[in-house]
Image (tube, rainbow, N blue to C red; front, side):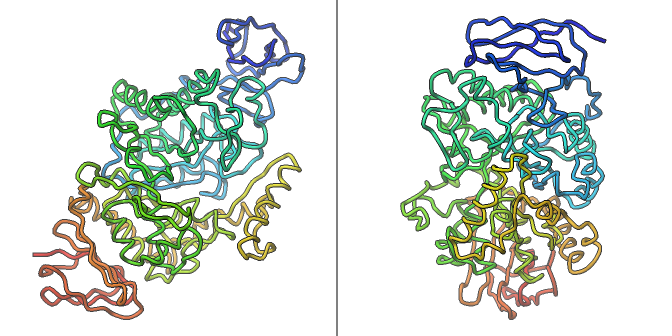
Amino acid sequence: MSAAVEFAVWAPVPERVRLQVDGSVYDMRREDGGWWRAEVEARPEADYGFLLGDDDTPRPDPRSRRQPEGVHGLSRRHDPASYAWGDRAWTGRPLAGGVVYEMHVGTFTPEGTLDAAVGRLDHLVDLGVDFVELLPVNGFDGTHNWGYDGVLWYTVQESYGGPAAYQRFVDACHQRGLGVLQDVVYNHLGPSGNYLPLFMPIFSEGGANTWGSSVNLSGPDSDEVRRYVIDNALMWLHDMHVDGLRLDAVHALVDERATHVLEEMAQEVDRLSVAEGRPLTLIAESDLNDPRMVTPRVAGGTGIHAQWSDDFHHALHSVLTGEGQGYYGDFAAAGLAGLAKTLTGAFFHDGAYSSFRRRHHGRPVDTALLPGWKFLGYLQDHDQIGNRAVGDRVSASLSPGLLAVGATLVLTSPFTPMLFMGEEWGASTPWQFFTSHTDPDIGRATAEGRKGEFAEHGWDADEVPDPQDPETFDRSKLDWSEPERDPHRRLLAVHRALLRLRHEHPDLVDPDLSRVQVSWDDADRWLVLHRGSLRVVANLADAPREIDLDVPVTDVLFATGELPLLDGRTVTVPAESAALLTTA
């Protein structure tokens, strides 16, 4: 049944804007500030678009909630308030003490949909994680993509199931005790289907980053652009009941105002958290190594609640794999000392010289003030797998023993641990870079650019998968038969045991970084992590190691393989294994 509906769009660029609703066209009136409005009769699920200037091709709504025909098609009205939520008992949960599971909807299940992902949530509950972090689901060109080529931030990709399926997914997570974090991208827009410049000055003049033009956050007419960004963040948290956002590459957000857009966003999210009566979390991906990012606003910081710690990843990855090329160089040279530095201070480059950047980088973390949970620690994530030439996981190069050692160090670290989907069983499937651009020129340029980038680093271009080839996408899907057979089943048991112990032992979730101590021996390749009265002993060598501890050991809580031998203050740890010990 049709009813009178007001359509509005911020479009200061065109001199004329008309509204098309279910085939009928209406003039819109311009108001101060570049807003256009029209009140017309429309069905609850009417298809609509905007005709800009003298162009008779309708463009999708910049704030479209649904795109049933993709990002080039008409928008469809969708009322998020029409969904009957079943999560009224959900009061949220803080990030502190939690474990995050990073998931890409399109490759998590064979079907690649949100509804299919719901069918696998019990696996995550049994695993023992606390949050599901979805890679970007905003509207992008084509049927499959990592999600970072999004061009319509307010919609949910139709091939995933659209906004209604998204609400069902969040609801199902909450009813199982799982929080939901949504990865969002505000630093750039994708190369295909981006009509926003026809409406608004979305890009800053002359500004650019690795992925394209910079978003206009502080230039002329940027007030409404900032509002467009912050309103989107609030939409996920309020309309979609999401518990937090992961903010992609915030170092690429160029903002010259006295109050940075991240600080403004943090303030509004904190205000919404109070109104909603549940914790709402902002997690930054930042390359700045600046602890002010996660320092509260009252202490002069930005007020973002947490951030990813690539330094911890790089240190752990280089120690386990021996890789030392590119940005792994400094970490490989430092060895276990570098891993110890990140375990106790979060940042390796804390003002130290970065050979990859060819300059000094970062600032120290005040471990007496900032808790460890504010830094996410991980052995794998979508970038560190997918941005390798062939998208190979560490399971392709590490032994089952070292995979278990890596899991132990992540899940007993003082940080908020994060797992990438399938990591818990050492998935053998790669996770490669894939796209499905409908514009053949963009598709060809993407494929050629990918191959050329790795050819410069010595790779055979023929070995680099074509991101436009559908088989690249299909290869990246998880094989759900693997967890039922060894060695995958054994590694899954390791993860489950470690996650259970995190919930049982307060020392393992103690956020006080100043209490964390590490001892190590580079020559014998062992490391001991002190977590209160517990000791995490890791032997990375291919032979048993006898290690003298600082206190007598009383019991073995957990071991990744054969039990270590205890003798007072001495423990003998089998090759490529780790153990969690209690002390007197």
